[in-house]
Length: 360
Ligand SMILES: *Cc1c(COP(=O)(O)O)cnc(C)c1O
Image: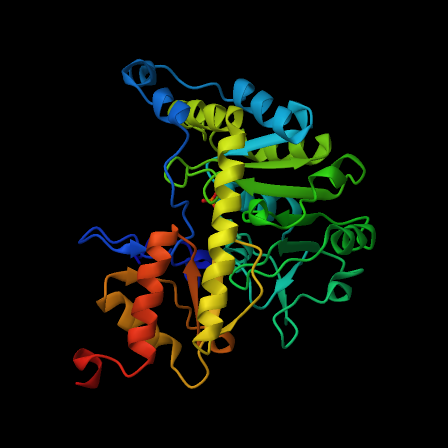
């Protein structure tokens, strides 16, 4: 920290992203990326012509991309806001809909960035404990008097609320924004997008990072009432109008047009997930019921950090969190069936006696 940083940012604890190691090839199961290549049309969009066009500014309104997204979700382009990853949108939402006079409410175990954006924008954040089984109690979020932020399905638990449960939360907070982060919704949960036409306080946030093989392109979007979208646009045009670059707009449009490819791959991932969960349970793991592309699992009697380290030594990267309530768990991204076979063999070796390197 330099002596120039102003006081209010000194106590900030920035978000720690999952490792993106550059030293060697791991089986990378730590940041919930898509294990399959993008649709061929997406690769075709990143060609020399597109690169040559980079000399020109991109369309700040993302007109073609929003049109393509709108067709997939059955909503007008005017109700869609696009941004540089959904983190960008979460940042704008905490800035626009919460603040010194407007608190925010989210679970104690959820996406770690909510707390960081809250702190960045001086928001009084209340973390409401999940139940003992790591489910959200919807009633905790009724009549809260501030912005409600829920990842659905939740991360890193993988557990989802139903659309009806969320609709009730939206109804119970008519004068507050209810933000539903649907980063993982394509792997099996019910989307709340159909509710956005009826509730002007509901904002659904989505990303092409997890289910559309575009994590490195940075593309997120939000669907909501025209008023909420205008508010986000107000912040964007006060920050960086060109936050979705030209190549990303082209990739996103191509991905949106070939949605069927991704939907069938997501179904494949869901099947691999269920297979992997069953295999882990057979080895004595407690695995939370996941509707995502990851599994959150602990082995009673085994230290979570130790398992993480032992897998890492075998070239397999998973995500371990140190928060006391979940430090016995690891979050394992569901990869290809081949990757899961390697993971399961390694877990078996580690849990059933270990190899010389652990006995040292
Ligand atoms: C990965 C993730 C995000 C961020 O996604 P980007 O679009 O890559 O910024 C947001 N919310 C949750 C719950 C996530 O898991």
